[in-house]
Image (cartoon, rainbow, N blue to C red):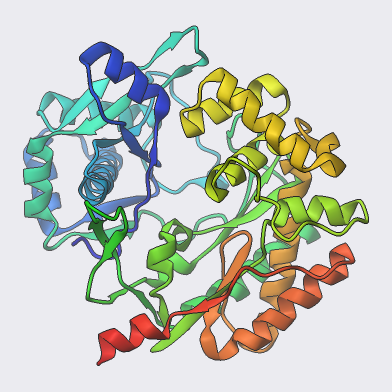
Length: 446
């Protein structure tokens, strides 16, 4: 296994439908998020680059080699998810010949989108990738970006490279306070006291997390009969890079602001095996947090579980609730639910209506782009919780609505979460069952 390779994927319903219609594929296609700030590194990959790009100029060499490393990493991530889910998995990346200047503060690599796209095409020509070009259609008003699927040749190549390859960042020091526009494009900004304070807080929290040793048992595959993840018997290092977090804002520094880090990409089952400095961990989860926050914001007590909706399992109800609250119109909400859950138009509308009926007191927040306020509020809650914990020397991994730390600090963390939530919203939070993972830990140690 490639050292410290963390992956996650999701079903891409539009490409699944497109490939089914065009090629008769009967299974869903999955995609991993595109990663361009990291790449696979080894002497074998350096030799491969020299073989494939023998006459490249010195000026272009560094960027092109990094682009190759990044493409190989994305292939490795897709192949890992293919193995784990027994499902065709690739990644989405538009092909573009338009140069785009990277804002200096956000520069995480030394290649452009054009160079990255060129390397993708080179590897497709070598038979390592299968490209399904993006297109516009009646159901995709903003266009469907190109899908890249690794081939059997890529699988053979990566199996040879994986023994010595490591995941490495291209730049060590990258911007931790990120500002994006509505389309997700990065925005430059002038530093002020607020951004400098947030950056110094993040560095303090990141250094505290990195001062600990985190390990976990990676998932190898899903069990064919039960559908549950089969975890490795061996612990591997989570790696200091994976417990570094950024904050990402949207348009201004009072919209969004959530904490993002690679550790969040671990599945719930994988997170359940994390140990810190040899100690099992506990994850404290605020139940149905965004629904709860809206009730409390209106001065009302929240239901015990905001995602308990008749006719729907909890995960489906949660997706419907978050999409409906965060969308800016009923049409866009229904479209996003169709995309995320594979529903028909009528099924999507019925799901939204079921949520509305179950939560009439907060129905005014439907289609109001509530995420702008909710994510900022939950990010500030996470900020307060982490800083309070840091005062007592407790490293915490934030996962939006839950917080993970060593089990010996569980009571302290629960008190901090309770205090910080009630201070902001006037009501105590309700926790999902916090589970320690001593059983799994002891099984491995025995």
